[in-house]
Length: 61
Image (tube, rainbow, N blue to C red):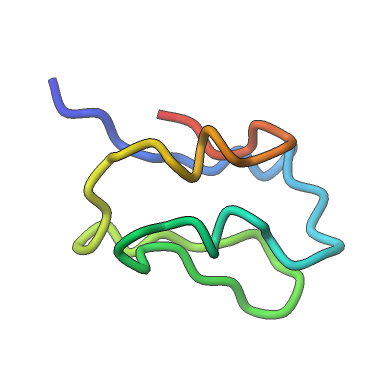
């Protein structure tokens, strides 16, 4: 079964630039202002780097 990235917005403080956006090797995460990041599933390779890097564990598989 292929894992799919999800954002748990209750865990995301949404008051800063998301640090996990910058670690995505394929640019699948983006952020508008201080909103929760969005995922481009056509780019996501399910590598897990963003979920490992997210300090609030808001990005999960």
